[in-house]
Length: 100
Image 1: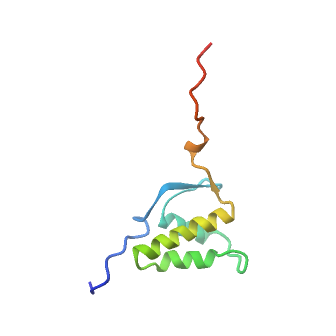
Image 2: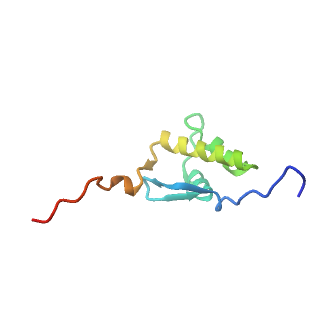
Image 3: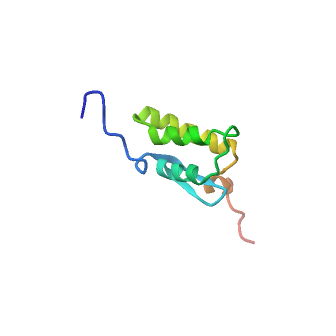
């Protein structure tokens, strides 16, 4: 490998933590999952940044570029209201009532 270049993680090795839950039932755990969602989503030129986000994820060469692309994916998905709160966010934050 040339100086200044290091092996990039494969898209399925760069993980989202915590994973993202979508309204269509998908669980996004990796960049590979994010790319699949972007590819399945209808392109709307001039309406959203789908193509730009997809290209950033596919073309990232460094960890920093990949992190920036993953952040852009989350912003894109939030703007389109595609994400749900993780299941643990729906759990009650109090102790259960004692049985009668």
